[in-house]
Amino acid sequence: MVRASALYLVIIIALVIGLICSSLVAVAYLYRAEYQKKFRYDQLNHNLSSGINLLLTSADSAYQKETKLSLFGVGNDSVSVQRKTWGIFDVGIVQAIIQRDTVYKIFSIANAIDSAKWAALYIADDDRPLSVSGKTRIEGNAFLPKAGILTAYVDNKAYEGDKRLVIGKKLTSDKRLPALDTNRLILLSSSFSINGNKQSLGDSLNCSFLKPTKVIDLAGKIYTLEKLSLKGNILLHSDTTLIIDSSVKMENVIVFAKTIVIREGFKGIAASATHHVWVLSGQSQQSFLHRPKL
Image (cartoon, rainbow, N blue to C red; front, side, top):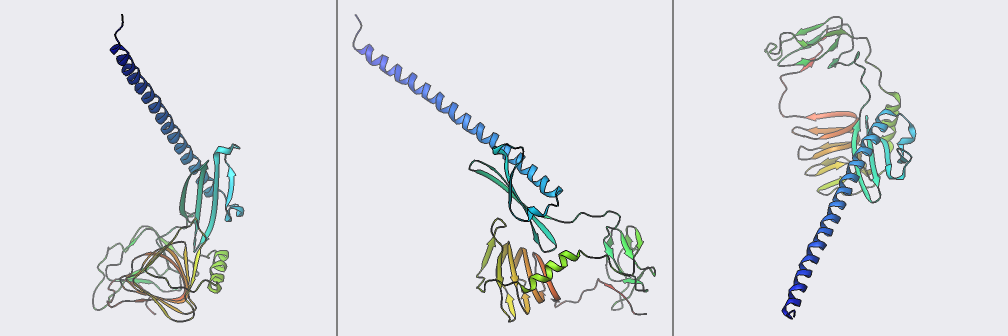
């Protein structure tokens, strides 16, 4: 005859077996979920790379606006691409989307380089030589006037740089500098008349390129930027002089002004368009290039 205590033992064993089985089911579910997550993440990155390559190899003007498309004709391979003008560069914005998951990349795009014309320095030939002084260093191919390159004395100091003067090939330049992109210049010129919001900048401002460009109008009076941080999709516009103090931190910001004054010590990544640029410095520079009058 089975004792009553054996029933409790059976219940406990059944409970343990149930817990083990449910744990195995939970582990299998979590493993499957993580596997699907990893697979989806890899697929998103693959689609992202495809979208980037598509944007870099296509000059289609339709991509100037955000364009959503399916890479392989399947709904799970959706990407959003956009190429917008940002100063002399373009900004590429690519997003890969699968259901509610999205990965994106924002990057700068420059024009393709003609290797035959690429150089570290190009000086238009106006029938006089280029002179270098101090510790000037020219590394790479250089397009120079037919009169060549000479060393010069400045402040009673002789040239102290590399004796080769140009560490690279010396090529002959033309009378005029290489032509710039006319369409890009027209676009930059039109930005001087752009209207934005008149507002206080505060201590910091960060605007993603996934959002519309934040245009800030600094009005028609001399304005000094100091002790602030600006980053991202921001355009500053001034009808007069804009002074940028060394305490300002900028990254990828475009500045339009009739005169931009950059004080000594400023460090940042900023694209600027101006009629005049002044650099205020309390120290004389001992190394520079200059063109002597004949």
